[in-house]
Every structure is written in structure tokens, then in C-alpha cells.
Amino acid sequence: MNYGITQQRVDAQNKINALANEIEGHLLRLLSDWQQKKAFKTSGYGGKVAALEKAFDAYCASHGYNVSAGDGRDASTVWVNLYRQYNSVTASVQNLISNGRRVEMHLGRTDDTGTLISLGDGYRRRTDYTVAEIEGALSQAYNLEEQARQLRSSVSDFQRR
Image (cartoon, rainbow, N blue to C red; front, side, top):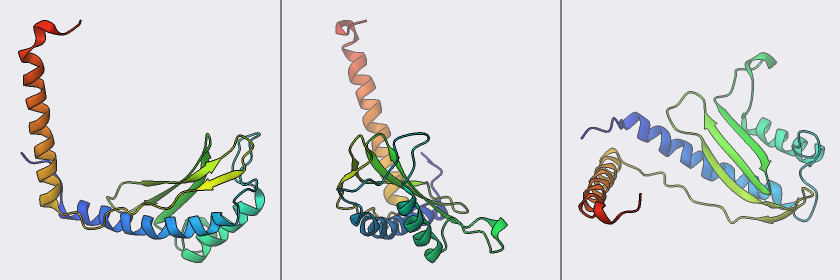
């Protein structure tokens, strides 16, 4: 079965995963100064406190991330977001011109007041996927799903409806 996985798509995902691994380390170091401090607003639309917003913007500027075409420079292709979702501190990385999917990273936790109470250890995303490996895994998953459907069907008289 052809799953439409191309070498270009695999290369793009491997590349964005490698970049996400790097950025995650940088953001964990940036956030380490904010442990046990209020890092996120809880009123209005929320968001980062002004000092953290400034530090994050400086990080992005120094690496060429989040540059829009309207500011006189070439637009960057990599966008990084750092945000609080409920009590989880999350970041996302996306390359706007590649086929790689957006990568989300769980960085830490806050309490209900927006104080950063813990940071994660980081997660190493794989950067060595191959087309053959992915197609093999998808094929195996499809076959297992088919076996499960057939097994459920064989005992359908005993299933609740």
C-alpha cells in the first residue's frame, strides 16, 4: 500500500525535529531564570509578562525567528511561539516553507497565578526517520487494525450495543 510518504517530507520532518530539539534547550535555559516567578499573565488575554516577552523576543531576533516581511528584513521561515495553555507552558516551532509538521514542546508548568513552578527535562525528537521505516510502520498498523476488526467481528454477538 502506498502511503504517499516522500523523501522530501521525511527530510523536512527530520530537519524541523532537529531544530525543535535545539530550540527546546534554548527555551528551557531562558525559562530557568523564571522558576518560582510570575512568568505569565492571568487576566485579560493572558500572555507572557513584559520582561519575559522582551527576553523571548530578543532570543527570536538573535536567531532570526519570527521576522515578518514588513520590518525591512527578509521574512524568516521559522516561527516560534511560547505560550501558557491552562497551567502548561508550551512552545511550538514551525518552518513555513517546508513540509514538516509544526512541533509542539511541553516546557513546564505554572500555578493558577502564572508563576512558573516547574520545568521539564526536554524531549529528544528523532531526526533519523526513513521512508521505508515509516511506510513499514504504517503498513503494520493497518494490518493490526484489520486483525482487530476481524476479531471484534468474530465475537460481535457478545458486544453491547
